[in-house]
Image (cartoon, rainbow, N blue to C red):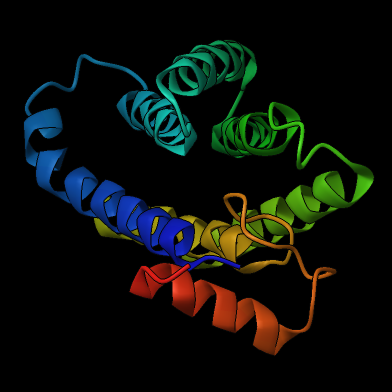
Length: 180
């Protein structure tokens, strides 16, 4: 398990929610732009997908796939719920479908449970106005951040099956301290 991905995901969610609140006055001045919140959500998916890449090649691939899925979701969604489901599926494709280490039935089940939980939690938090939408964004990211705390979903560290918890914690500490 790694807290690096968890913290980065939480930070991204918080910044996405905060930036939505900060740019709302600019968007309110341009009411002729339809679906600004939808475009913002799609842009957040692409940006988050790029951040998930461990190399420049992975970041480019993730961004391209997320952009394609976001475009399909934007084109096919008839309402905000359908768009949220489409973008959540896009996140699952980028995070689990493109990573050979995570592409398994367990990985897809994990994505399904987290995706459903994140959508339900965001739906509960959603309320009219920009603050309600921003809170829903943050709530979605909060649940999705749990992905990085689950065994086997970290960035190359040992999985739950290798050694006991003490051995894994000791190995992590040694890495942090710089000892071999």
